[in-house]
Image 1: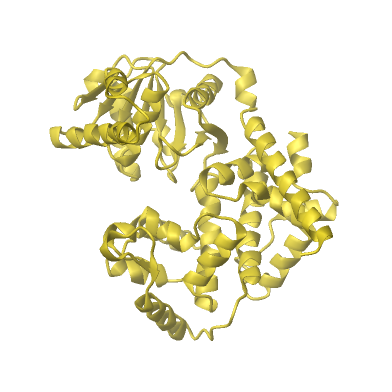
Image 2 (image 1 turned 90 degrees about the vertical axis):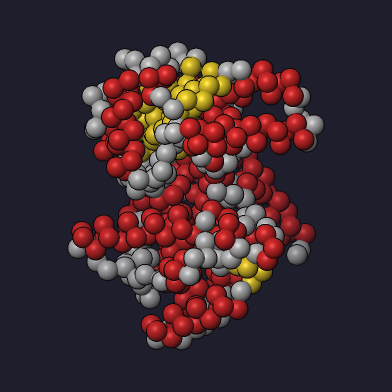
Length: 451
């Protein structure tokens, strides 16, 4: 690399890092915070003691709250308590906590199997199974037992919070708090604002995030909110690349080369392939029922899940994990599944360079990000950036997907989308906001300044 090119790369990196810092501070600047004061919070309840519920409980305990955890029966609450204690025992083993400090912290923790034990809490965070009927049943119970003015929060990743709020007699008190797993470590907290929530509840959620040392981002209600909605689209782009000729291992390598700690197929294996499988089936059924144009659908991940290969927890997914290793090895059987799917659809595989892979991956991410901003799901482009920097491993020196688009140049991103749209006009259709900004000679950052 020439000295001039190195200087240019350094300049872009410093721009990206400066933007990341600015965006994280600015994300807390929301209309509701200036319109209302937060409600006082001292006692919290967490419904559910699985991995997510336990992580949220630890976050709340570490922030100084008293926490009551509710599970459905004695066995489940015993597991929930063990999940919480395991985190603190891990810190003790590393010399980062004393047994006395653990005991003092757990003195503020109460395990329970009775909803009646949470009638006086100030805020409840529901963290049960990702099924809307299960969550609605929990919220009906919360509506019955919780005191007036208690904030009722759901930790859903995708589901319609307006529909959850509607089963209560107090939709003004219902909000989304989407923690990322492991909840006691991950910094991002998507604060999802349903239509009927009051401003002071939104302000309370931001104050809670601050006390928990989280980075909050305000999001609107849609399937997947900001992060998972955009993730679903660039994951589709990765699936298309795989079916068109790149192996999952080449795609992961290109994404790591861009600066991510892991590629999309590694992430699927880490999270558990069954989670995405359930979401795909739900979305596909909804799409077919809506009569929307039929989008291209890659079935490789479904074939892998049908074999019971759900990733690290089952010892194989897109990768093999022999003897419980955490680092996956390429699996010839997965490549055979990919080849069979290509043959079934009459796809002649072609080669993709790492640069070509990333052009498509990033174009899909940026284009959906533009739609999320245009629809008001994100207040500003910087909210998309913060979501991806704090929750999805986006390389910090690149500033986030929208800042990266500005640095590459929006005309170039739009040209890529138009080129790819010749193969698939439905998937690669440019977002109207992106076309408008290019036509006006503006960038995403101009929308951050206007907010």
